[in-house]
Image (cartoon, rainbow, N blue to C red; front, side, top):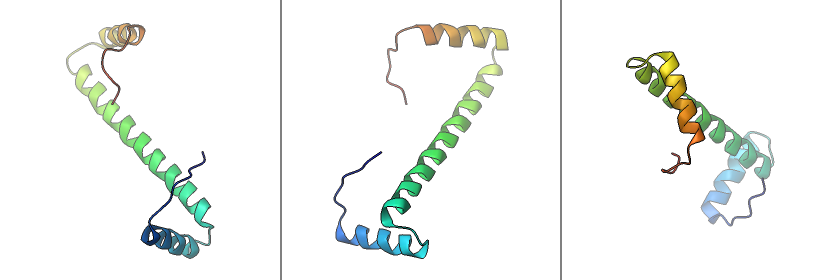
Length: 82
């Protein structure tokens, strides 16, 4: 992914300083930070979905839940995804 953004001077200075502390070029530092943030978001989403499925299983059998998920996946989405 290529980002072409102009950062405020203070942000640029901070990123450059942090990158130096980690012995990385600023571009690589930003790349790794973005990857870490995406991985953290993915983990949070997995945990959120696991909690939701657990709550659903408290009130439905696994077979019924699987049927409902299959049905939902084959229908056009009416709501935007979170």
